[in-house]
Length: 268
Image (cartoon, rainbow, N blue to C red; front, top):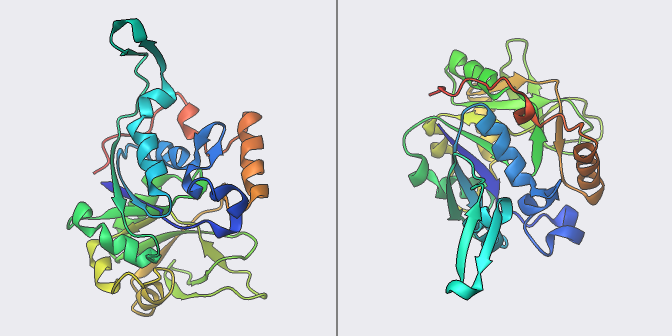
């Protein structure tokens, strides 16, 4: 199953850092947050990624093109025709498709542009600026149990994002913009969709979190995977520093891949 990651935005709320590189390439512990997100998914056996690029896309493409250089010991022998030897060959079992989805394209438009790489199959989607210890295997199991088009992982945090009303049977009954009085759960990313979702995406101007989500909720096609574990976005320099501090202290809750017991890798 393919994992789509939205990594094309401008990152204006953390502009003091993102003027040099796209937000998904800002680092936690010396590795881009995008790498951390991909490690989360691969821990649960998902290795095929489609990255929706946009702003400073060349930075993302160059980082993956030089993955060995970033993660392995390398010897350059200039006396022998500039020969390069890679030691240890540190790599991941990943297949990564990097797609230029446009500089000013909205989130729904970016998803729409990668449809040809997804095909007619169930896929997962998340944002390239947040980490979590959500059990993706359980998330997928829940999605398959209800038969609807869409599943969102929803969590309760201080409100800064679009919020959801969730019924007792975990159906999302509305998807709306935040207000000062909201105490509802928010969309934390880590979503699962059936290919029918593309019928809700009109063009590059489609904001995925607005009309498509509202329509899905109105039609009873949007379900909530309730999650009370760790989730943190990286919208500000303060949040980036917080994530780095947790990493340096060896207390990063999203670092599941340190566990010796691997999750099942045969999810299809």
